[in-house]
Image (tube, rainbow, N blue to C red; front, top):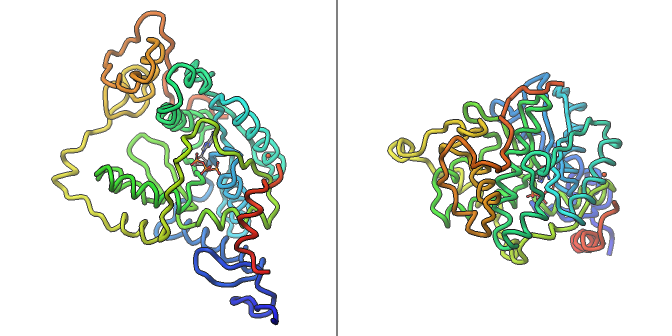
Length: 350
Ligand SMILES: Nc1ncnc2c1ncn2[C@@H]1O[C@H](COP(=O)(O)OP(=O)(O)OP(=O)(O)O)[C@@H](O)[C@H]1O
């Protein structure tokens, strides 16, 4: 059988079938469409960046944030965005996982020539995830990690004097979040989770340039570009987390986008304030991280999760606390794993 020609350039041999469109394309055209689609997401509407903006890339060393760092560096030069890019990594303190992935980020720092800042949970909260899991067990540890990471990224950005954080959340992640919010009936989050950029008063701007990028295509891009990334799943993630995957990813995102929040519902939603104890943005007297930390410090196990009603501005004597949040306090990278190779080979046209 003669080789299939690329459906875009019609000259080179098609090497892959795009998971997003089914088009059979050559490697160069795949790179080109992938990068152009990310650029389109970035410039759509008002655009997510402002010229000269300082932007921190949330860098975990995994495929998504590694490809994001690479593609943003490329697009920044190609389209003259004029961005000042940084890598920002949060070290959750997970032995045998984050310590290894941080080595990958350090390699990316050299490869992309971007400054890197690492901020650890230990430094910020006095707790590592290893210690938290020892105390609360594995079942609910993701709640602690998620709350702590969100705030740690904001604090790391503030220390860098950066006003904008971009993360590698992809279309599959967003589709999953849309479904979870529909199932939970969480209208407020449903409204927010499909936005490319989110920012409320006093919070650091967050954007997801990979909103429409399929996870499989991100993996393909990393594989064909031979990027250095870390491909192990978090050792504390529950086994069934990704067992159910939606197929019509973009359709789900679009259905989430079309949900409109009635004004009467919006009025009933809690107003944001700042945490009485650490000054971070919060909808309660204490932010979630301070409330969780108080439970941990009190020696509680899984019930620490329910201790979110604490509301005193003073922490109990002897408890560790989080430093005050100040926006402008301190202005101042492995081979693809076998599994990934197999996944790419499955969609490669032989
Ligand atoms: N420890 C971290 N430090 C900095 N940013 C992080 C960290 N963990 C996650 N992020 C950011 O949040 C995004 C989504 O994180 P998630 O845990 O869902 O990882 P993922 O889908 O495996 O992404 P990746 O492949 O980049 O690890 C990442 O792409 C990255 O931008």
